[in-house]
Length: 331
Image 1: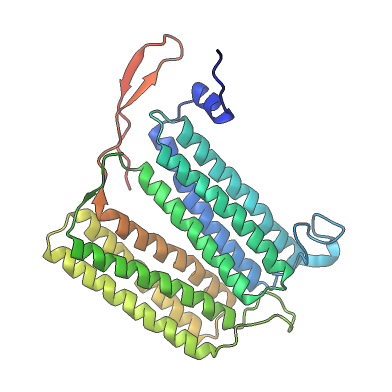
Image 2 (image 1 turned 135 degrees about the horizontal axis):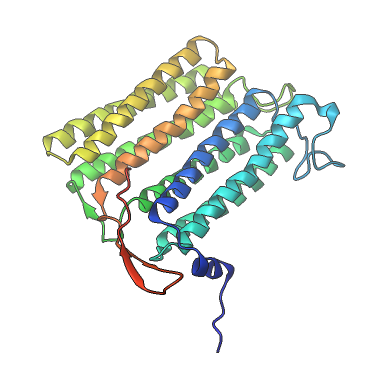
């Protein structure tokens, strides 16, 4: 009886990408997740949030922007089109993970998780337009993008390590301190979205766009307070790792996080004392992505799952088995 095969299986029977190709595809997902955040910020900072006044089409009678809509329509529509590019990159990562031998189901699951987050966020983006840039929906739109970045980083990291059972590199109290750091950073990002929702960059020049009814200076001060909390936890984690003589990998990740936080802090202060110029706000949004990536890399560095497995590659011409050791990835 013939075996029923889905399209991914058919591809896997004809193409077995290397582990390095899978890693690069996963890293491309991380890059695109950051790009979609930055370009979404560009839409808001150029007052193009309602450049296409409806959704899913650009206008009631046109899928694409019309000349009368000017540059704002082009910017908004371009950001929408980037969603398709993102889907293509995620799709490539899913196919590569499924076709790689041996099959690693966790990588395909993480790829599909990204796909569904993208689909959900596309709907939230449409609701954002239909509600006239409601600041709470805008915040949810950004936080879903952060969720996408989280899953993309997890997939990238898993593609760089083996499938052995996780082994902790530090004691439980150190892991708990790291979890507090992750939670504080997540709160920092959430408060940052509130700062944005209460600030002057509403995303459209219309005065009718709602803002979150909070004092911008007070919520910004709370955001700064959490910056110091995250910095303090980072320094505390570094001293703790040195005290327990942790491996060099986790210590290096914490140093990287500290450097990113310091750079982001400089950008934040420049933004605050210069009345939030658009370019600096955009750089700050990019920096928030780098901070979250660095925090996740610290979290993931505190355990290991062994080296990448040795794969068995089948020669298409002879059908013989040949042992191939994939090159060690640098993460």
